[in-house]
Image 1 (cartoon, helix red, strand yellow):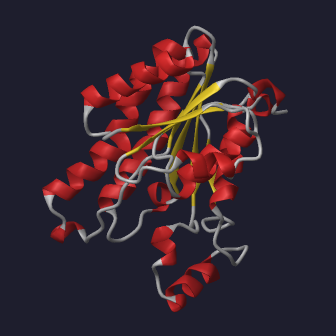
Image 2 (cartoon, one colour):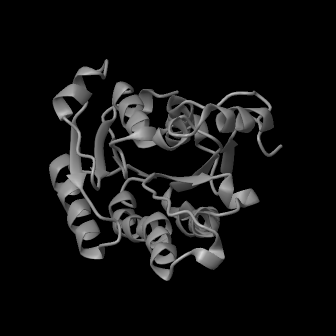
Image 3 (tube, helix red, strand yellow):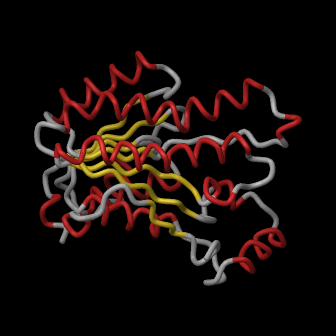
Length: 248
């Protein structure tokens, strides 16, 4: 199923930590060449490459602020120059600035929307002309928060819900160019944000999940790999919930 991915190039935003880092590692292990962006958390690439079983994949990282359109355009051009092609795009980068809406500043509303949603729009718009030459796939990392809503996260939920609508609309626009567009709505995932919570709160989350556990970042990454592969060749415009049964 994954043999067709060998030697192709994927660009992953926010690939230096959490879910993004697991995506980068899994895709490289499956013989893709990986370009990934980071904003503040630059990785030691030698350590990253040592952790990847497949040593033939080409991996580069690029500093990028997704609020800066000029930086986005420059990074996409640099990736195309360095790799010669971009076959896939994974819009993973995202931030949180939580607060109840009545207490939320306009700055924090705008920062989350501009990074999590507008940033995905801008980089996808820049990548699509490159991808149209050969076809490809886009995967947008959304969240179940964008489906059910979470108190204190109106900005984050609005952005993640927007990604789902973005996915549906864009899939119809580019299907004729052999480009598929899908989204993943993750539930609670074992990231730094979850790790920093007290045990009682985490246990409360687990009780709401049918599988009674928090997802690993690898479990999100494996769905990304599937959606990029030929195994998902007839899937587009879809949002896959990877939440352990949280909202079923």
